[in-house]
Amino acid sequence: MSVAHTVLASTNTGLAHFTQAPEPKKIHWLIEKGLHFKNHPLAQSHLGQGKTLALIFFNPSLRTRLSSHKAAMHLGLTVMSLNANEGWQLEFEEEVIMNSDRAEHVKEAAQVISQYADIIGIRSFPTLTNQEKDYADQVLNKFTQYASVPIISLESAIRHPLQSLADLMTINTFKTTPNPKIVLTWAPHPKALPQAVANSFAEWVLASGAELTIANPSGYDLAPEFRQGAIQCHDQAQAFADADFVYAKNWSSFEYYGQNLPVEQDWQITPEKMAWTNDAYFMHCLPVRRNVVVADAVLDSSKSLVIEQANHRTFAMQAVLHEILQHV
Ligand code: AN0
Ligand code: CP
Image (tube, rainbow, N blue to C red; front, side, top):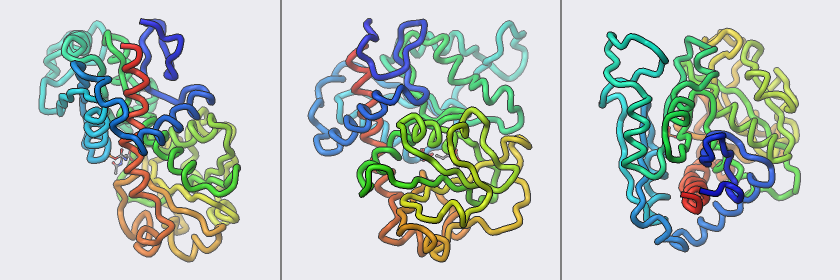
């Protein structure tokens, strides 16, 4: 298999996995390809014929599951999906005595699934209790280590690359100037959530060559490797000034790992705060909690792009599958 022309990160196994942001030229290529498929979804409807995509979910999903199915169907692929927690519990540690409730090692499981599928998608959230383990992205990386077919991240412990690709497709579609002001803002949530969506959004926006402002309360700074290169501030009003896109997301603390720290001001996105911006578009990956993360009036306004972002998930996945299918 040749990886010379793939737009995806290749590894020393020679496989083209999709787990993080590729190089800038390739990001732009994927955005264009995704938007092309949006207009011509069935343009390559035979490419995947006779091939199978396996989707393995360790955690819940609405958009990722269905948009991945839809994208695969557009390319003629057959899809199998497994709720991993309803199957045998997998062991991911090496050289372990397997006398716990974990019945099967990922070493066998990944090789077995590779015989049934030509491409494997994996969704696996972080523990939010063990920073070192989470940031080693163990579940995703053990699958890429032991599978003999390409792996697509359907959101791992620390990244959500398909979401970010869809988000950049959305910004690309709606921007009216070459360099819009893009703001990623933390917003409240009753539960401790992963940093994955925010990490990836920052990674992709910055890798694409755009500028990014990140606003979050103190104690909520993202991991240094993800926020490096962004304009960082702890003041939402300052960040929102002249913004063209406001991307809201909750994440739990990286510094006080996995915790929901008390926050003094209200960081919910309201019409009053959107009035500070340059009539900005509102973005969120969904699922979103109304009147906690964002007020109804913002989410239901004509400037809300959340439904279009979700629409772009299908064509982001289709672009990635198309790219991989050329090489399997
Ligand atoms: C998840 C998260 O924050 O990572 C999935 C978002 C796509 N969100 C929730 O669990 C609410
Ligand atoms: N945005 C997103 O990935 O949604 P799901 O968790 O429903 O897949």
